Image (tube, rainbow, N blue to C red; front, side, top):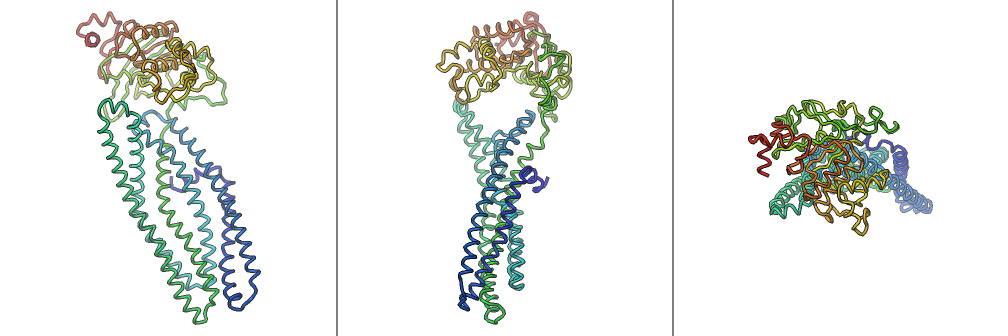
Length: 576
Protein backbone atom coordinates (compact mmCIF):
# COMPACT_ATOMS: atom_id res chain seq x y z
CA UNK A 1 0.00 0.00 0.00
CA UNK A 2 0.99 3.61 -0.61
CA UNK A 3 1.99 6.10 2.05
CA UNK A 4 -1.45 7.64 2.44
CA UNK A 5 -3.14 4.24 2.64
CA UNK A 6 -0.73 3.23 5.41
CA UNK A 7 -1.28 6.53 7.23
CA UNK A 8 -5.02 5.97 6.97
CA UNK A 9 -4.59 2.69 8.82
CA UNK A 10 -2.46 4.33 11.50
CA UNK A 11 -5.01 7.15 12.01
CA UNK A 12 -8.06 4.86 12.04
CA UNK A 13 -10.31 5.59 15.00
CA UNK A 14 -8.81 9.02 15.66
CA UNK A 15 -11.47 11.07 13.88
CA UNK A 16 -12.44 13.27 16.84
CA UNK A 17 -8.88 14.27 17.58
CA UNK A 18 -8.19 14.92 13.90
CA UNK A 19 -11.29 17.12 13.70
CA UNK A 20 -9.98 19.18 16.62
CA UNK A 21 -6.59 19.62 14.93
CA UNK A 22 -8.20 20.69 11.64
CA UNK A 23 -10.62 23.13 13.33
CA UNK A 24 -7.83 24.83 15.25
CA UNK A 25 -5.73 24.97 12.09
CA UNK A 26 -8.44 26.63 10.03
CA UNK A 27 -9.02 29.31 12.67
CA UNK A 28 -5.28 29.94 12.93
CA UNK A 29 -5.16 30.31 9.14
CA UNK A 30 -7.80 33.04 9.17
CA UNK A 31 -6.11 34.83 12.06
CA UNK A 32 -2.83 34.76 10.10
CA UNK A 33 -4.28 37.42 7.77
CA UNK A 34 -4.76 39.88 10.61
CA UNK A 35 -1.08 40.72 11.14
CA UNK A 36 -0.06 41.77 7.59
CA UNK A 37 -3.31 43.67 7.06
CA UNK A 38 -2.96 45.50 10.39
CA UNK A 39 0.67 46.40 9.77
CA UNK A 40 -0.14 47.66 6.28
CA UNK A 41 -2.84 49.93 7.66
CA UNK A 42 -0.53 51.01 10.50
CA UNK A 43 2.20 52.10 8.07
CA UNK A 44 -0.16 53.94 5.70
CA UNK A 45 -2.70 55.43 8.10
CA UNK A 46 -0.95 55.79 11.44
CA UNK A 47 2.61 56.53 10.40
CA UNK A 48 1.76 58.16 7.09
CA UNK A 49 -1.39 60.12 8.01
CA UNK A 50 -0.90 60.28 11.81
CA UNK A 51 -4.21 58.46 12.42
CA UNK A 52 -5.29 56.77 15.68
CA UNK A 53 -3.46 53.53 16.57
CA UNK A 54 -5.61 52.26 19.46
CA UNK A 55 -7.91 50.09 17.38
CA UNK A 56 -5.06 48.43 15.48
CA UNK A 57 -3.12 47.70 18.68
CA UNK A 58 -6.22 46.18 20.27
CA UNK A 59 -6.83 44.04 17.17
CA UNK A 60 -3.26 42.81 17.20
CA UNK A 61 -3.39 42.00 20.93
CA UNK A 62 -6.72 40.21 20.59
CA UNK A 63 -5.46 38.24 17.61
CA UNK A 64 -2.32 37.30 19.53
CA UNK A 65 -4.34 35.96 22.47
CA UNK A 66 -6.55 33.90 20.14
CA UNK A 67 -3.51 32.51 18.34
CA UNK A 68 -1.98 31.53 21.69
CA UNK A 69 -5.14 29.71 22.86
CA UNK A 70 -5.71 27.95 19.55
CA UNK A 71 -2.06 26.91 19.35
CA UNK A 72 -2.29 25.37 22.84
CA UNK A 73 -5.43 23.48 21.86
CA UNK A 74 -3.87 22.23 18.63
CA UNK A 75 -0.73 21.04 20.43
CA UNK A 76 -2.88 19.27 23.03
CA UNK A 77 -4.81 17.46 20.31
CA UNK A 78 -1.58 16.49 18.55
CA UNK A 79 0.00 15.12 21.75
CA UNK A 80 -3.12 13.10 22.50
CA UNK A 81 -3.04 11.73 18.96
CA UNK A 82 0.67 10.85 19.21
CA UNK A 83 0.05 8.97 22.47
CA UNK A 84 -2.87 7.08 20.97
CA UNK A 85 -0.89 6.08 17.87
CA UNK A 86 2.10 4.93 19.96
CA UNK A 87 0.11 2.86 22.45
CA UNK A 88 -2.24 1.23 19.94
CA UNK A 89 0.45 0.78 17.29
CA UNK A 90 3.00 -0.72 19.67
CA UNK A 91 0.46 -3.15 21.12
CA UNK A 92 -0.79 -4.11 17.66
CA UNK A 93 2.75 -4.61 16.34
CA UNK A 94 3.87 -6.75 19.26
CA UNK A 95 0.65 -8.79 19.22
CA UNK A 96 1.05 -9.38 15.52
CA UNK A 97 4.71 -10.36 15.96
CA UNK A 98 3.76 -12.96 18.58
CA UNK A 99 1.30 -14.54 16.12
CA UNK A 100 3.89 -15.16 13.41
CA UNK A 101 5.42 -18.60 12.78
CA UNK A 102 8.85 -19.44 14.16
CA UNK A 103 10.32 -19.55 10.64
CA UNK A 104 9.72 -15.78 10.38
CA UNK A 105 12.26 -15.16 13.17
CA UNK A 106 14.90 -17.42 11.63
CA UNK A 107 15.54 -14.94 8.82
CA UNK A 108 15.55 -11.74 10.89
CA UNK A 109 17.61 -10.45 13.80
CA UNK A 110 15.68 -9.94 17.04
CA UNK A 111 17.15 -6.45 17.43
CA UNK A 112 15.94 -5.53 13.96
CA UNK A 113 12.42 -6.79 14.75
CA UNK A 114 12.43 -4.86 18.02
CA UNK A 115 13.36 -1.71 16.13
CA UNK A 116 10.56 -2.33 13.63
CA UNK A 117 7.93 -2.64 16.34
CA UNK A 118 9.19 0.32 18.38
CA UNK A 119 9.42 2.46 15.22
CA UNK A 120 5.74 3.33 15.80
CA UNK A 121 7.03 6.01 18.21
CA UNK A 122 8.95 7.60 15.33
CA UNK A 123 5.88 7.25 13.11
CA UNK A 124 3.71 8.98 15.73
CA UNK A 125 6.24 11.78 16.16
CA UNK A 126 6.70 12.39 12.43
CA UNK A 127 2.97 12.16 11.84
CA UNK A 128 1.92 14.64 14.53
CA UNK A 129 4.95 16.93 14.47
CA UNK A 130 5.23 17.07 10.70
CA UNK A 131 2.48 15.54 8.59
CA UNK A 132 -0.67 16.90 10.28
CA UNK A 133 0.95 20.26 10.96
CA UNK A 134 1.90 20.30 7.30
CA UNK A 135 -1.72 19.77 6.21
CA UNK A 136 -2.74 22.81 8.24
CA UNK A 137 0.21 24.76 6.83
CA UNK A 138 -0.74 23.93 3.26
CA UNK A 139 -4.29 25.11 3.87
CA UNK A 140 -2.80 28.32 5.27
CA UNK A 141 -0.53 28.68 2.22
CA UNK A 142 -3.53 28.41 -0.11
CA UNK A 143 -5.33 31.20 1.76
CA UNK A 144 -2.17 33.32 1.85
CA UNK A 145 -1.62 32.82 -1.88
CA UNK A 146 -5.09 34.20 -2.63
CA UNK A 147 -4.39 37.16 -0.33
CA UNK A 148 -1.05 37.80 -2.07
CA UNK A 149 -2.72 37.93 -5.47
CA UNK A 150 -5.16 40.44 -4.01
CA UNK A 151 -2.20 42.62 -2.99
CA UNK A 152 -0.23 42.35 -6.26
CA UNK A 153 -0.16 39.69 -8.99
CA UNK A 154 3.37 40.45 -10.27
CA UNK A 155 5.04 40.14 -6.89
CA UNK A 156 2.99 37.01 -6.18
CA UNK A 157 4.20 35.35 -9.39
CA UNK A 158 7.80 36.18 -8.46
CA UNK A 159 7.42 34.59 -5.03
CA UNK A 160 5.57 31.59 -6.50
CA UNK A 161 8.30 30.98 -9.10
CA UNK A 162 10.93 30.97 -6.34
CA UNK A 163 8.88 28.44 -4.35
CA UNK A 164 8.51 26.20 -7.43
CA UNK A 165 12.24 26.38 -8.13
CA UNK A 166 12.94 25.43 -4.52
CA UNK A 167 10.54 22.48 -4.90
CA UNK A 168 12.20 21.18 -8.06
CA UNK A 169 15.66 21.21 -6.48
CA UNK A 170 14.39 19.60 -3.28
CA UNK A 171 12.53 16.88 -5.19
CA UNK A 172 15.69 15.97 -7.10
CA UNK A 173 17.79 15.63 -3.94
CA UNK A 174 15.00 13.79 -2.09
CA UNK A 175 14.76 11.17 -4.82
CA UNK A 176 18.39 10.32 -4.14
CA UNK A 177 17.89 10.46 -0.37
CA UNK A 178 14.94 8.05 -0.60
CA UNK A 179 17.24 5.24 -1.72
CA UNK A 180 19.83 6.13 0.89
CA UNK A 181 17.18 6.34 3.63
CA UNK A 182 16.14 2.71 3.07
CA UNK A 183 19.77 1.62 3.10
CA UNK A 184 20.45 3.57 6.29
CA UNK A 185 17.43 2.09 8.14
CA UNK A 186 18.41 -1.40 7.07
CA UNK A 187 21.96 -0.99 8.33
CA UNK A 188 20.70 0.54 11.59
CA UNK A 189 18.43 -2.45 12.20
CA UNK A 190 21.29 -4.86 11.57
CA UNK A 191 23.55 -2.90 13.90
CA UNK A 192 21.00 -3.14 16.71
CA UNK A 193 20.61 -6.87 16.07
CA UNK A 194 24.34 -7.59 16.13
CA UNK A 195 24.76 -5.45 19.26
CA UNK A 196 22.01 -7.38 21.09
CA UNK A 197 23.64 -10.67 20.11
CA UNK A 198 26.99 -9.48 21.46
CA UNK A 199 25.53 -8.34 24.79
CA UNK A 200 23.32 -11.41 25.21
CA UNK A 201 26.22 -13.83 24.75
CA UNK A 202 29.03 -11.77 26.30
CA UNK A 203 30.00 -14.52 28.77
CA UNK A 204 30.16 -17.23 26.08
CA UNK A 205 32.17 -14.99 23.79
CA UNK A 206 34.65 -14.30 26.55
CA UNK A 207 35.00 -17.97 27.51
CA UNK A 208 35.64 -19.01 23.92
CA UNK A 209 38.00 -16.12 23.24
CA UNK A 210 35.75 -14.91 20.43
CA UNK A 211 34.96 -11.53 21.98
CA UNK A 212 37.52 -9.69 19.85
CA UNK A 213 36.28 -11.34 16.66
CA UNK A 214 32.65 -10.57 17.46
CA UNK A 215 33.57 -6.99 18.36
CA UNK A 216 35.27 -6.75 14.97
CA UNK A 217 32.03 -7.98 13.40
CA UNK A 218 30.06 -5.35 15.32
CA UNK A 219 32.59 -2.65 14.40
CA UNK A 220 32.29 -3.59 10.75
CA UNK A 221 28.52 -3.29 10.92
CA UNK A 222 28.84 0.02 12.75
CA UNK A 223 31.15 1.29 10.00
CA UNK A 224 28.60 0.28 7.35
CA UNK A 225 25.81 1.99 9.30
CA UNK A 226 27.90 5.14 9.77
CA UNK A 227 28.78 5.23 6.05
CA UNK A 228 25.10 4.87 5.10
CA UNK A 229 24.18 7.63 7.56
CA UNK A 230 26.84 9.95 6.17
CA UNK A 231 25.69 9.41 2.58
CA UNK A 232 22.15 10.18 3.68
CA UNK A 233 23.23 13.31 5.59
CA UNK A 234 25.21 14.74 2.66
CA UNK A 235 22.06 15.31 0.64
CA UNK A 236 20.28 16.55 3.76
CA UNK A 237 22.78 19.38 4.00
CA UNK A 238 21.73 20.58 0.56
CA UNK A 239 18.07 20.67 1.58
CA UNK A 240 18.94 22.42 4.83
CA UNK A 241 20.79 25.23 3.02
CA UNK A 242 18.15 25.77 0.30
CA UNK A 243 15.53 27.63 2.42
CA UNK A 244 18.08 30.24 3.45
CA UNK A 245 19.07 30.85 -0.15
CA UNK A 246 15.44 31.09 -1.29
CA UNK A 247 14.62 33.51 1.57
CA UNK A 248 17.50 35.79 0.61
CA UNK A 249 16.51 35.82 -3.07
CA UNK A 250 12.85 36.36 -2.16
CA UNK A 251 13.67 39.33 0.08
CA UNK A 252 15.85 40.92 -2.57
CA UNK A 253 13.30 40.39 -5.33
CA UNK A 254 10.27 41.63 -3.35
CA UNK A 255 12.07 44.69 -2.01
CA UNK A 256 13.60 45.57 -5.39
CA UNK A 257 10.41 45.18 -7.43
CA UNK A 258 8.11 46.45 -4.68
CA UNK A 259 10.36 49.41 -3.88
CA UNK A 260 10.30 50.41 -7.56
CA UNK A 261 6.49 50.22 -7.55
CA UNK A 262 6.26 52.32 -4.36
CA UNK A 263 8.52 54.99 -5.82
CA UNK A 264 6.46 54.97 -9.00
CA UNK A 265 3.28 55.46 -6.98
CA UNK A 266 1.77 52.13 -8.05
CA UNK A 267 1.83 50.73 -4.48
CA UNK A 268 1.76 52.20 -1.00
CA UNK A 269 4.51 51.50 1.50
CA UNK A 270 1.99 49.84 3.81
CA UNK A 271 0.89 47.50 1.03
CA UNK A 272 4.53 46.53 0.37
CA UNK A 273 5.10 45.84 4.08
CA UNK A 274 1.91 43.76 4.24
CA UNK A 275 2.87 41.82 1.11
CA UNK A 276 6.40 41.22 2.42
CA UNK A 277 4.99 39.69 5.60
CA UNK A 278 2.48 37.60 3.59
CA UNK A 279 5.28 36.31 1.35
CA UNK A 280 7.33 35.34 4.37
CA UNK A 281 4.34 33.57 5.92
CA UNK A 282 3.61 31.84 2.60
CA UNK A 283 7.13 30.53 2.09
CA UNK A 284 7.52 29.28 5.67
CA UNK A 285 4.95 26.45 5.20
CA UNK A 286 6.38 25.74 1.75
CA UNK A 287 9.81 25.34 3.34
CA UNK A 288 8.33 23.03 5.98
CA UNK A 289 6.63 21.05 3.22
CA UNK A 290 9.92 20.54 1.43
CA UNK A 291 11.54 19.66 4.76
CA UNK A 292 8.78 17.10 5.30
CA UNK A 293 9.56 15.43 1.98
CA UNK A 294 12.87 14.61 3.65
CA UNK A 295 11.12 13.38 6.82
CA UNK A 296 8.62 11.54 4.65
CA UNK A 297 11.36 9.17 3.59
CA UNK A 298 12.00 8.19 7.20
CA UNK A 299 8.25 7.91 7.85
CA UNK A 300 7.67 5.79 4.76
CA UNK A 301 10.67 3.59 5.55
CA UNK A 302 9.39 2.93 9.08
CA UNK A 303 5.90 2.14 7.78
CA UNK A 304 7.28 -0.23 5.15
CA UNK A 305 9.47 -2.02 7.70
CA UNK A 306 6.40 -2.53 9.90
CA UNK A 307 4.50 -3.72 6.83
CA UNK A 308 6.81 -6.75 6.68
CA UNK A 309 5.36 -7.82 10.04
CA UNK A 310 1.79 -6.83 9.19
CA UNK A 311 1.63 -8.78 5.90
CA UNK A 312 3.43 -11.97 6.98
CA UNK A 313 1.18 -15.03 7.22
CA UNK A 314 0.12 -15.95 10.74
CA UNK A 315 1.03 -19.23 12.36
CA UNK A 316 -1.71 -21.74 11.41
CA UNK A 317 -2.30 -22.55 15.10
CA UNK A 318 -4.17 -19.26 15.53
CA UNK A 319 -6.69 -20.29 12.89
CA UNK A 320 -7.62 -23.24 15.09
CA UNK A 321 -8.18 -21.20 18.24
CA UNK A 322 -11.78 -20.90 19.36
CA UNK A 323 -13.49 -17.49 19.64
CA UNK A 324 -13.08 -15.87 23.04
CA UNK A 325 -16.83 -15.86 23.61
CA UNK A 326 -17.06 -19.62 23.30
CA UNK A 327 -17.15 -21.82 26.41
CA UNK A 328 -14.03 -23.77 27.37
CA UNK A 329 -13.21 -25.93 24.29
CA UNK A 330 -13.12 -29.69 24.68
CA UNK A 331 -12.25 -32.59 22.41
CA UNK A 332 -14.46 -35.66 22.43
CA UNK A 333 -15.88 -34.45 25.73
CA UNK A 334 -12.47 -34.07 27.41
CA UNK A 335 -10.48 -31.02 28.41
CA UNK A 336 -7.22 -32.83 27.62
CA UNK A 337 -5.99 -35.45 25.21
CA UNK A 338 -5.62 -39.05 26.34
CA UNK A 339 -1.97 -38.92 25.31
CA UNK A 340 -1.69 -41.00 22.13
CA UNK A 341 0.78 -39.58 19.61
CA UNK A 342 1.40 -40.66 16.03
CA UNK A 343 3.51 -39.35 13.16
CA UNK A 344 2.83 -40.62 9.65
CA UNK A 345 5.38 -40.12 6.86
CA UNK A 346 6.43 -36.73 8.23
CA UNK A 347 8.88 -34.76 6.11
CA UNK A 348 10.30 -31.39 7.16
CA UNK A 349 13.20 -29.02 6.53
CA UNK A 350 14.11 -25.42 7.20
CA UNK A 351 14.64 -24.46 3.57
CA UNK A 352 12.50 -25.83 0.76
CA UNK A 353 15.25 -25.20 -1.76
CA UNK A 354 17.36 -27.83 0.03
CA UNK A 355 16.79 -31.49 0.89
CA UNK A 356 14.54 -32.03 3.94
CA UNK A 357 16.10 -32.61 7.35
CA UNK A 358 13.53 -35.23 8.36
CA UNK A 359 12.25 -37.66 5.73
CA UNK A 360 9.15 -39.93 5.84
CA UNK A 361 9.37 -40.37 9.59
CA UNK A 362 6.86 -42.59 11.40
CA UNK A 363 6.18 -42.89 15.12
CA UNK A 364 3.43 -44.15 17.40
CA UNK A 365 3.31 -43.71 21.18
CA UNK A 366 0.46 -45.03 23.28
CA UNK A 367 -0.78 -43.10 26.35
CA UNK A 368 1.74 -43.30 29.18
CA UNK A 369 4.53 -44.78 27.05
CA UNK A 370 8.05 -43.37 26.91
CA UNK A 371 9.85 -43.24 23.57
CA UNK A 372 13.36 -41.86 23.12
CA UNK A 373 14.97 -40.41 20.01
CA UNK A 374 18.77 -40.54 19.87
CA UNK A 375 21.42 -40.02 17.24
CA UNK A 376 24.47 -38.00 16.34
CA UNK A 377 24.38 -34.19 16.33
CA UNK A 378 22.45 -32.77 13.40
CA UNK A 379 20.41 -35.94 12.88
CA UNK A 380 17.08 -34.13 13.35
CA UNK A 381 16.23 -35.03 16.97
CA UNK A 382 15.40 -31.52 18.20
CA UNK A 383 13.56 -30.78 14.97
CA UNK A 384 11.39 -33.81 15.59
CA UNK A 385 10.64 -32.58 19.12
CA UNK A 386 9.60 -29.16 17.85
CA UNK A 387 7.32 -30.70 15.24
CA UNK A 388 5.48 -32.65 17.93
CA UNK A 389 5.24 -29.52 20.11
CA UNK A 390 3.69 -27.62 17.19
CA UNK A 391 6.48 -25.09 16.83
CA UNK A 392 7.02 -26.17 13.21
CA UNK A 393 4.57 -27.49 10.64
CA UNK A 394 5.57 -30.51 8.53
CA UNK A 395 6.04 -30.16 4.79
CA UNK A 396 4.12 -33.36 4.26
CA UNK A 397 2.69 -36.18 6.31
CA UNK A 398 0.52 -36.00 9.41
CA UNK A 399 0.89 -35.61 13.15
CA UNK A 400 -2.04 -37.15 15.01
CA UNK A 401 -3.18 -36.95 18.61
CA UNK A 402 -5.61 -39.55 19.91
CA UNK A 403 -5.99 -40.71 16.31
CA UNK A 404 -6.98 -37.31 14.90
CA UNK A 405 -4.91 -34.88 12.79
CA UNK A 406 -3.58 -31.94 14.72
CA UNK A 407 -5.73 -29.37 12.90
CA UNK A 408 -8.90 -31.19 14.03
CA UNK A 409 -8.07 -30.73 17.71
CA UNK A 410 -8.91 -27.32 19.26
CA UNK A 411 -5.72 -25.41 19.90
CA UNK A 412 -6.70 -24.78 23.53
CA UNK A 413 -6.96 -28.54 24.12
CA UNK A 414 -3.51 -29.04 22.57
CA UNK A 415 -2.01 -26.34 24.78
CA UNK A 416 -3.51 -27.92 27.89
CA UNK A 417 -2.29 -31.37 26.87
CA UNK A 418 1.19 -30.88 25.36
CA UNK A 419 4.17 -29.37 27.12
CA UNK A 420 7.82 -29.14 26.16
CA UNK A 421 11.11 -28.70 27.98
CA UNK A 422 13.60 -27.24 25.52
CA UNK A 423 17.37 -27.62 25.70
CA UNK A 424 17.64 -23.82 25.70
CA UNK A 425 16.29 -22.82 29.11
CA UNK A 426 14.41 -19.51 29.18
CA UNK A 427 13.83 -17.77 32.51
CA UNK A 428 12.23 -14.36 32.87
CA UNK A 429 13.19 -11.50 35.18
CA UNK A 430 10.21 -12.15 37.44
CA UNK A 431 9.34 -14.14 40.55
CA UNK A 432 9.81 -17.91 40.64
CA UNK A 433 6.04 -18.30 40.86
CA UNK A 434 5.57 -16.26 37.67
CA UNK A 435 8.33 -18.22 35.93
CA UNK A 436 6.60 -21.50 36.75
CA UNK A 437 3.04 -20.36 35.98
CA UNK A 438 3.93 -17.84 33.23
CA UNK A 439 1.77 -15.23 34.98
CA UNK A 440 -1.34 -17.41 35.04
CA UNK A 441 -3.17 -16.42 38.26
CA UNK A 442 -5.57 -19.37 37.88
CA UNK A 443 -2.86 -21.94 38.71
CA UNK A 444 -3.38 -23.08 42.35
CA UNK A 445 -0.53 -23.33 44.81
CA UNK A 446 -0.99 -27.09 45.05
CA UNK A 447 -0.24 -27.49 41.35
CA UNK A 448 2.84 -25.25 41.62
CA UNK A 449 4.22 -27.12 44.59
CA UNK A 450 3.50 -30.54 43.04
CA UNK A 451 5.25 -29.56 39.79
CA UNK A 452 8.26 -28.19 41.72
CA UNK A 453 8.48 -31.34 43.85
CA UNK A 454 8.42 -33.60 40.80
CA UNK A 455 11.13 -31.40 39.25
CA UNK A 456 13.16 -31.77 42.49
CA UNK A 457 13.38 -28.00 42.98
CA UNK A 458 10.68 -27.32 45.61
CA UNK A 459 12.90 -27.76 48.69
CA UNK A 460 15.64 -25.57 47.22
CA UNK A 461 13.11 -22.82 46.52
CA UNK A 462 11.88 -22.90 50.12
CA UNK A 463 15.47 -22.50 51.37
CA UNK A 464 15.61 -19.06 49.76
CA UNK A 465 14.50 -16.15 52.00
CA UNK A 466 11.66 -15.13 49.67
CA UNK A 467 10.67 -18.63 48.58
CA UNK A 468 8.49 -18.56 45.48
CA UNK A 469 8.59 -14.74 45.54
CA UNK A 470 12.34 -14.82 44.79
CA UNK A 471 13.04 -12.69 41.74
CA UNK A 472 15.01 -14.37 38.98
CA UNK A 473 17.85 -12.23 37.72
CA UNK A 474 18.29 -11.69 34.00
CA UNK A 475 19.01 -15.00 32.30
CA UNK A 476 18.62 -16.85 35.62
CA UNK A 477 22.04 -15.67 36.78
CA UNK A 478 21.18 -16.34 40.45
CA UNK A 479 20.50 -20.04 39.75
CA UNK A 480 22.79 -22.87 38.68
CA UNK A 481 22.42 -24.60 35.32
CA UNK A 482 20.75 -27.62 36.93
CA UNK A 483 18.36 -25.43 38.91
CA UNK A 484 17.38 -23.49 35.80
CA UNK A 485 16.68 -26.73 34.00
CA UNK A 486 14.54 -28.05 36.85
CA UNK A 487 12.57 -24.78 36.95
CA UNK A 488 11.77 -25.28 33.29
CA UNK A 489 10.67 -28.85 33.99
CA UNK A 490 8.39 -27.54 36.78
CA UNK A 491 6.93 -25.03 34.32
CA UNK A 492 6.18 -27.84 31.88
CA UNK A 493 4.50 -29.96 34.58
CA UNK A 494 2.41 -27.28 36.30
CA UNK A 495 -0.44 -27.71 33.81
CA UNK A 496 -0.46 -31.49 34.34
CA UNK A 497 0.06 -32.30 30.62
CA UNK A 498 -0.69 -35.68 29.08
CA UNK A 499 2.09 -35.43 26.47
CA UNK A 500 5.55 -34.22 27.44
CA UNK A 501 8.37 -33.48 24.98
CA UNK A 502 11.80 -33.46 26.61
CA UNK A 503 14.66 -32.09 24.52
CA UNK A 504 17.87 -32.60 26.51
CA UNK A 505 15.75 -31.73 29.54
CA UNK A 506 18.04 -33.32 32.15
CA UNK A 507 21.45 -32.76 30.58
CA UNK A 508 22.60 -30.48 33.44
CA UNK A 509 21.37 -32.76 36.25
CA UNK A 510 23.45 -35.21 38.24
CA UNK A 511 22.55 -38.89 37.98
CA UNK A 512 20.63 -39.07 41.28
CA UNK A 513 18.49 -35.99 40.54
CA UNK A 514 17.88 -37.18 36.99
CA UNK A 515 16.63 -40.53 38.32
CA UNK A 516 14.34 -38.80 40.83
CA UNK A 517 12.81 -36.60 38.11
CA UNK A 518 12.41 -39.65 35.88
CA UNK A 519 10.56 -41.52 38.63
CA UNK A 520 8.23 -38.58 39.18
CA UNK A 521 7.36 -38.48 35.48
CA UNK A 522 6.58 -42.19 35.54
CA UNK A 523 4.25 -41.71 38.51
CA UNK A 524 2.39 -39.02 36.58
CA UNK A 525 1.80 -41.47 33.72
CA UNK A 526 2.49 -38.81 31.11
CA UNK A 527 3.33 -39.79 27.54
CA UNK A 528 6.99 -38.85 26.97
CA UNK A 529 8.97 -38.20 23.82
CA UNK A 530 12.58 -37.90 25.01
CA UNK A 531 15.44 -36.44 23.00
CA UNK A 532 18.80 -37.08 24.63
CA UNK A 533 22.52 -37.27 23.98
CA UNK A 534 23.20 -38.80 27.39
CA UNK A 535 22.03 -42.35 26.76
CA UNK A 536 21.72 -43.21 30.45
CA UNK A 537 18.51 -41.15 30.37
CA UNK A 538 16.81 -43.43 27.81
CA UNK A 539 17.81 -46.98 28.78
CA UNK A 540 14.45 -47.75 30.40
CA UNK A 541 12.27 -46.29 27.63
CA UNK A 542 9.64 -48.48 26.01
CA UNK A 543 11.21 -47.82 22.65
CA UNK A 544 14.33 -46.10 21.35
CA UNK A 545 14.53 -44.66 17.83
CA UNK A 546 17.93 -43.94 16.28
CA UNK A 547 18.17 -41.18 13.69
CA UNK A 548 20.93 -40.46 11.19
CA UNK A 549 20.63 -37.51 8.80
CA UNK A 550 16.89 -37.33 9.40
CA UNK A 551 16.24 -40.99 8.64
CA UNK A 552 15.38 -43.76 11.09
CA UNK A 553 18.17 -46.35 11.07
CA UNK A 554 17.27 -48.41 14.15
CA UNK A 555 14.34 -48.98 16.47
CA UNK A 556 13.85 -51.14 19.55
CA UNK A 557 14.52 -51.42 23.27
CA UNK A 558 17.93 -50.78 24.81
CA UNK A 559 18.73 -54.51 25.02
CA UNK A 560 17.61 -55.16 21.44
CA UNK A 561 19.70 -52.32 20.07
CA UNK A 562 22.76 -53.24 22.09
CA UNK A 563 22.61 -56.74 20.61
CA UNK A 564 23.48 -55.27 17.20
CA UNK A 565 27.16 -54.49 17.63
CA UNK A 566 27.40 -52.98 14.16
CA UNK A 567 24.51 -50.65 14.77
CA UNK A 568 24.63 -46.90 15.37
CA UNK A 569 23.13 -47.17 18.87
CA UNK A 570 25.83 -49.59 20.06
CA UNK A 571 28.50 -47.24 18.74
CA UNK A 572 26.88 -44.24 20.43
CA UNK A 573 26.77 -46.05 23.77
CA UNK A 574 30.39 -47.15 23.50
CA UNK A 575 31.61 -43.73 22.41
CA UNK A 576 29.67 -42.10 25.27
